Structure formats: structure tokens, C-alpha cells
Image (cartoon, rainbow, N blue to C red; front, side):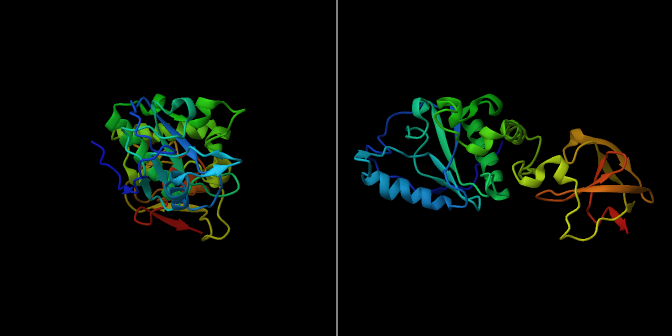
Length: 272
């Protein structure tokens, strides 16, 4: 069983603008973004709880807005509305969707490593808790309203293959196939394979070759999942290095053979 992530409760007071206490029967989990990159998530919490909840007008009309959860840039998860109640976030899906607002970073509105891990953890746990399927029951706001209405969360809508990877990460965590510390943020700019295998000019020089120090798996993909293992490198073997895959945990060398192996100095020595 997946443990519940750490959640800070910032309950919104009962009010007609964001928390009307209308019952919610959960069928989906809807991912949103807070709308402006590099703005702390706690500011969104404050806006919902201290501005909208008190009655706030724009162009003469009251704003009706809230969210069940907000995830900050540092990975902090806030809960504002109980999951037994509806919030005002996902238009026609308010009656059946748990809403998660997520802070973003960068010009493309991607996620920090801490934010992405919290997204995966929270969504996987909610799917376990509510009996949902990570691959079919996690949706975007745009899935409900269409692209002409709103691109939300904008990064995932513009990069649907990353949304697919995110849902796969959630499913694998929920199923116990991976652990939280092995989650890799697929939204960072250098995750792209063409960039990810390039040496980082600000880091230590890339070795021309590596020598194996102790038994270590080599893989057909730059991850540490059991499914990617294709063999075991033995002490004394030497391999030619052609690139480096930057990861949120342990980096990996790309070898001339097309395989990948850890950069961990316990297992390999660089030959420059």
C-alpha cells in the first residue's frame, strides 16, 4: 500500500464562492496549473482562502473559484477542500473531479523536481484511496473544456506525451513497481533525449571510457527500473562513453553500444 503524502491542511471556510459543501462523488482527478510561472503555490492558497472566499468581484461579477489541493514549487502539498465536497475548478467536471492546482516554473511552465514528485505521489495515492485507474482517471482541465477554452495545465496540454509519462509514473508508483525516490521529472528541459545525453559543460569533463569496479547492471533505457536491465557488467570491463543522461537522482552514462549504466563511483571509474 502506498503511504499518504504529507499534506498541510489550509481549510477554506464554508462559503458560496469556493466551498458550498456540495457533495462530490469522485470519478476523476483533474490537473490544473496556477496560471503564472514561478509564483509560489501558497499565494494561490491565500487567493482562494482569503480573497475569493470573502467575495471578490471582477468586472462587476463575483469570482467562484477553489481547488481541493495546491502543490507548491518546493513540493509542499496544501489541501483546501475535503475530497467529499465539490470545488470550483473544473467547470462541468466539478461534480465528479478532484482538482489539483500546481505551481510551475520556466518559460514553458514545466515542473520542479520536488513539484513533480509530489504530483505523482498525491495522484497515485488518491487513485489508490478512491479506487481509480491512474492511466484513465487522471485528466487535464483541457480534457473537460477543450483547447479553445483553456490550455490547462499548459505544459501537459502542449506536451501530451509527457502527460502520458506522468500517468505511467503514477500507475507504477501505485502498483509498487517503482519507489518515490526513483521518480524522474519528465518535464525538465534536459529530459529530452537529444539534450539529456549531452555532456553538461559546467560539470566535470565526461570520461572517454569507464572501467567497472564491481558487478553492475547495464540497461536499454536511462532509468533504474527492473524492466530496463539487459545484462551485468563485470569488474575490469571497459566501455566507451558517448554521453551523459542528467537525472534528478543518479546520472547515467550512455555507452557506445547504446546501453546505459550508472555514474555511481562505487561501481565505475572514469578514464579521461
